Figure (cartoon, rainbow, N blue to C red):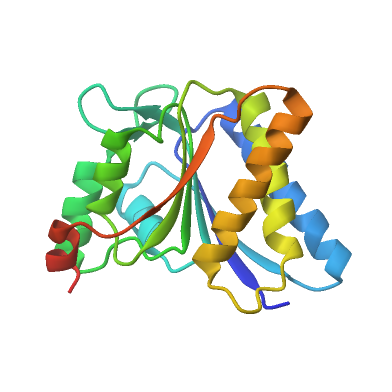
Length: 208
């Protein structure tokens, strides 16, 4: 199994988000123990600094897992519980364009409320350097929904040796398996939705 890289980006910045990220890390580390080697390299960023956040967003990885409150009343925005940190995708796309480098993850897991809407998908496309598997939510979610889905997602993703498919395809397959597992475990529709997104014309021009 090739080593995968997962970037965990906590913008929520409170104890509940920290606990949820700790759960994700523990899940991945348990998989590493099972294989007796580092099947996954984890980059964990918890910061309010805009430059640090931008670097985390644009780092090359298999999965960019962003955990924060999701808002799109004005523009799709990741924010912290106390409101002191707010990162809109419009701002992110503009700053990334200035540096000539967009989001280059194979998959993005936007772990927040209502991040799977059309407005979010459109805004994400403006930030992309390449095609990506995008996993967002169609409703309000809490810690239970997040942890049930994420444990199934990473379990499915890391059982695959990755032969014959791209990292984005593996993430899509894992997300679809996690959706099925979520329904089985909770008897409720899965709020996490998966789509393939391509860079917008604006992104293609910015990151050519």
